[in-house]
Length: 309
Image (tube, rainbow, N blue to C red; front, side):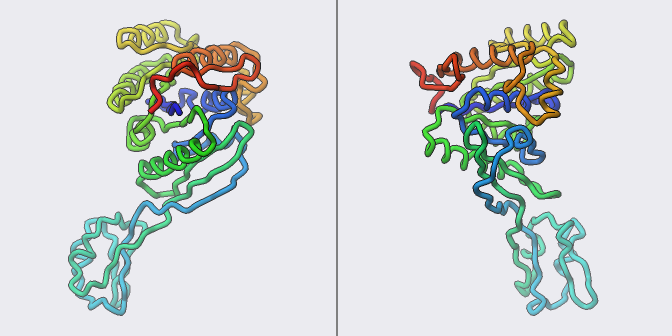
């Protein structure tokens, strides 16, 4: 099985829009949305949830009033102002508590315990393109990298159970913890960029992160015709780094129409952007050792996949 992670470095480059079309072209792939802080791939895939499990990724302090001696050591130790006096007793403000455990460490009566909290959910669904896994953090929760790891583990399990040849992961923008967790163990990183200075800067950073995790970087330049000179500069940089450019996707108003309709562009788009994505898919499957049926676009086993682990 090949694990393909689609990242962008910069937000708003069209990464999720492209992932939806890749899922439509692959048909039998397992798809995972690892942008757990703001998941939106489900808006285009329209999945039906088959399993929803809670995710506990953080801890908060809790005070047992029967054991508390009201000494105030916990309030003195807390640097986040999370320990509040409530009359004669003390209580924990869960919104301010960072779960560091300092209060529990200094409590002489052992009245404070760290309690696991509901941080979000992991959902397994079925969509018309196959199995779909995504996670969602509750508002204000952190540790998104841990949730991404859990989502990927679940997606890998299902990919093995489905005998899928391809796992497509929609990563988060940037190079932070969610992206690092998305790229961990991946074989290929498809970097979606756009012709702008900030996108070129972030392309360099995310490509370096991908290589750090031994994921083969590939590049797609979205909306390439809006600034051809910058698109050429991005292509020149990629060439100097030995990173293949799979496609230059032009700006196309059909993309907007498809998004408004809640459908992947590739389903009924015949414009230049859809054609560029089809070309990208052909080059991508060739690059990772998969072959596709010309009639359906379904990925099958190639002659040898050098990136399968």
